[in-house]
Image (cartoon, rainbow, N blue to C red):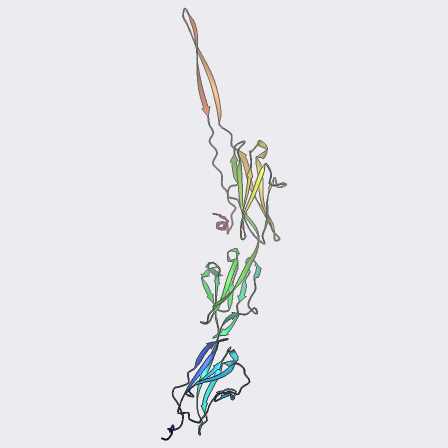
Length: 356
C-alpha cells in the first residue's frame, strides 16, 4: 500500500484574533493552519520587522518569547510578563510562495497609578485664600480623575456652589474657609482594576474665635458651678482660664478645667467647687495661637439662699385661774433662682460654635 499524502497548499483555518492583556501577565496569540505539510510557520513583530520564531525554534533573544503547537496545526506565540513596550502588531506567517500571513494586535492595558509629581501634597493656606490641587495619574487607557471629600461632605468650589464630586486633574476652591478644612481624595480609574486614590489634606489657618453662650451665670453659696466657652482656631490654640484678666486658673481642690477638642473646635469648661463669696466676679476664657489671641468674659453672680422670718403673738385671758396661751405664726419669704441672661458674641460662624 502507498503512503497517503496531503494535497494542496497551506491555508489559515481562522483569523488571528487581537489580544488584550494587563501589564505583567502572559499574552498568547493563536494561529490556526491547515495542510501545513513541509512548510513552516513563523512569528514576527510587525513594527520592528523582527523575526521571533521559525517553526519550533525561538530566534529572538527575548527570553519572554516562546512558541508551542498542537500537531503542527494550531500554533501559539507566548509573550510572558508583558510590558507596555510589547504593545503593537504581530504576524503569523507561512513560507509559501507567495508568502501567506495574518496579523493581530496586542493591546497592553495598565491599571492607574497616581504620580507623586506633579500631584499635590498636603496644602496649608490662610482662611479666605484660593487653592488649586492637582492630581496626575498614569495608566492605559488614560485614567479619569475624580475628586471627593473624605466622609462624603460637599465641596464648596465657590461660596455659592457646593458639589459632591469634581472631575478632572485640577480641584480649584475659591475663598476657602474653615468648613473646607479636611481630607480630599484624588481617585484615578480607567476600567482596569484596581482603582487607586491619594489622600490630600487641606489645612486652613485662622486666628482664634470664642463664643460664650451664657455671659451671666448665677450660683448659690457652697454650690458647684460650671462655666463654658467654645473656641475655633488653627493652628491648634492654647486654651486657659483667668480671673480679672490676670490670675491664671489651674486644676486643684478649688477648680477643675476640661477641654473637649474636635479638629479646630474646642469646648472649654471651668468647674468651681463649693462657691464662696470671694468666687463671685468676672472670669475669662482665653484662646491663643501663632496668629492672634482672644478671650471671652463670663460674670459669676450670687443667687441668695431662701430665708425664713418668725413672729410671736401672745394672748392673755384672766379668770379665777390665770392661764397664758401663746400662739406662734410663721411667715417664709423664698427667692427663686434668677433666669440666666444669655448673650452670644456675633459672628458669621456662630452656627459652628454649637457642640452636641
